[in-house]
Image (cartoon, rainbow, N blue to C red; front, side, top):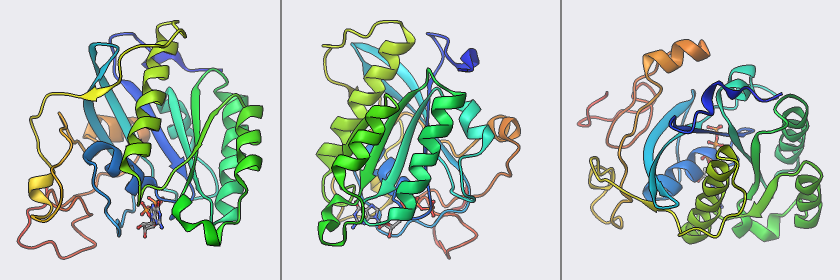
Length: 248
Ligand SMILES: Nc1nc2c(ncn2[C@@H]2O[C@H](COP(=O)(O)OP(=O)(O)OP(=O)(O)O)[C@@H](O)[C@H]2O)c(=O)[nH]1
């Protein structure tokens, strides 16, 4: 049954990005929020991104948690925290598809009214494909989940469109309005520009309102440790020598 404690119309939409290791969860999340593709993104804990989106003509706070795949399935904390889930697998990795299938099953049983989007990532690697699109699409349909294949590496536009539409649907579902047909989502309010901190040859960054890496309160709720990040490159400060960047 759905936990409605985070579903207040005025509260942030909480979206968890889940999936097994190396499927591209971090790359996808950062691509969506900044338009950048970060090829090597080491992570060993969850990260929470807070931003404000323009949804149906109104600013909507959204929290996206890029989860860390540390075990064979999504944790209870993730399942309870979010009201919507993006379940990612890599089309080149059958094991990751099984992980995603198990998670869909779990969500159907325990969070049956949550919005779910199943994403087959790395579609640019078609020659290494291990998961057929029709099989995954059928599975998603069985669980009343949305489905898309994407290449986070190669198509920023597709990633943006698919996630924008999903978040729009999540909001509509929260408001009990499934009709859709509203104006396209747009990010608003630039108070932090990640791009200028990442690289001078990169394209302009996508605006974000806040980037917060699991504040203490959220961490406590999830019973997970805090970790330090290097603000410019968004990598764990303890795993890479980020000097002269400043760890936050
Ligand atoms: N070819 C290709 N590689 C991708 C794509 N998306 C991500 N990758 C690569 O896949 C690897 C894993 O990406 P991550 O974003 O770190 O994956 P993750 O799911 O967050 O991994 P964990 O932190 O272990 O849970 C990296 O080497 C990325 O460059 C894609 O669309 N195409």
